[in-house]
Length: 87
Figure 1 (spheres, rainbow, N blue to C red):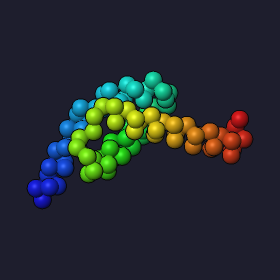
Figure 2 (figure 1 turned 180 degrees about the horizontal axis):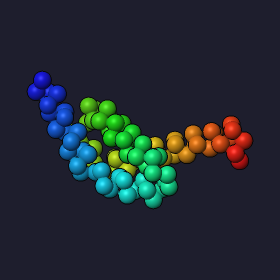
Figure 3 (figure 1 turned 90 degrees about the vertical axis):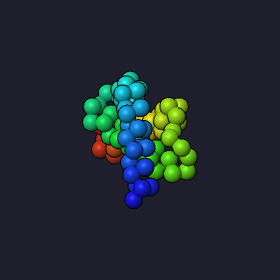
Figure 4 (figure 1 turned 90 degrees about the horizontal axis):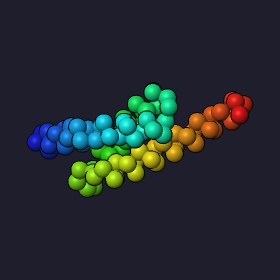
């Protein structure tokens, strides 16, 4: 139970430290509001899963996670558009 409480505090700290910075970073790369929110959420989930292997991620680690998620989302969007004949 103590470990769980410590994890919750660490995750809250992670969100408090990086939410605004990551949101701004993503909004410069992605125009769709819902996509921005999804990427922000996915980046925190990915960081929290990986944080079991290391301490609280630094900003550069979080930025790397975000950039990879943006690239993945772009390729998925491109595939969906090709599949539906949009391009």
